[in-house]
Amino acid sequence: MKNTKISSLSPDAERSGQAEGSEAGLTAVGLGHPNPEVVAKAKRRIFTGEYKQRVLAEADKAKDESGGIGALLRREGLYSSHLTTWRHERAAGILQSLTPQKRGPKSKRNPLDDENQKLQRENQHLREELRKAEIVIDVQKKVAALLGRPLCTTDREPQF
Image 1: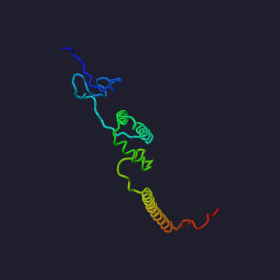
Image 2 (image 1 turned 180 degrees about the horizontal axis):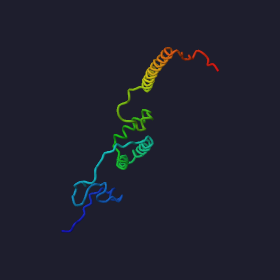
Image 3 (image 1 turned 120 degrees about the vertical axis):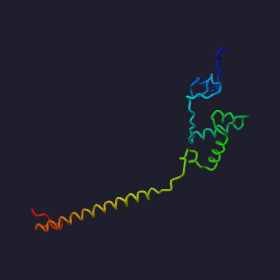
Image 4 (image 1 turned 135 degrees about the vertical axis):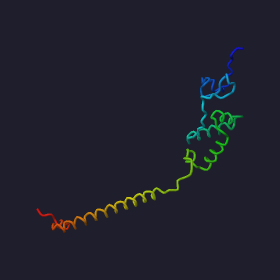
């Protein structure tokens, strides 16, 4: 029996020159079994505001053509829900929503509170250092008085 290759690559993959063992992931020998060397990893797509506006403009032009929007969606790899959401955002005048936003829960912490807590900790640390320094100075004064050599206080000006 002759070893024939059955291409299971998409037409786009064949046109772009992808061969077996590449990211397409299917081999001719396995007849539809995925290539174990290829690991599929989903990646979230992020659309810029300019891209969204360009696609919406193209979709508005394609409304007049029969099947124009479907062709646009297939070409760009989008879903109709993308257009619906982007149209609502555009209609609401939410310009900043056309640009991608950071996902996840919003931070409830106030940066001023963080800075305030940091300054309070620093203040407490400095007060503790001052307390220790005052104890050391007090001990030095007592030792100097016991030895009969009083320390110069900062109240008097130095004598030359």
